Length: 255
Image (cartoon, rainbow, N blue to C red; front, side, top):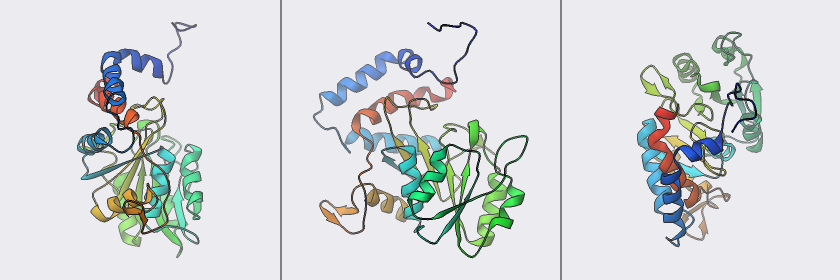
């Protein structure tokens, strides 16, 4: 029960669990009795199902939305000395992820009516060091992807969509997350599609970028225990993947 019945919370993770309790409990039971808890069939199935929902060829489950952004940027070869354009009106994770790669965030002002990045001001911020644009779909509102992609193509820049607040949002008939070179989602418990813990996903249509993210999320391994490149430990665990699989079919109705 809410203390104030007139107050509608922006997010209510417990309410979301109770709405789909039987399916979530069954998913948890399935994982606990499987004996396989990291990078197994639940994660692989959720990657396929979420990619199909968004409309991309590949999806890679990672430990958080912040890690999704870091790994997407790193997979694009972005690092020390590079600049990445984004908006100042976003969760701190967007800028923190850029900084964690060693790159420099370049902040472009927002539109007063939507609070999204002002596309007309992006070109003025592009320098010889600029390598990518991280566009944020804030409060479920898609950014002006046509303008951003046109500008990125003109200057040979990568476009990474930050979709942490836009699970299921549609732009010109296609879901956000299927437009840029890569897209990043968070499954933090308060998101539209929320886990019961942390989780994230990187999506792309580029097989090479997807393969690179898979390596980077687990110590740079292509072959187990052999690190081809420096990597990290950033894996979506089986329990969270199973919970998200249970919730995904209800996402559009929940939205």
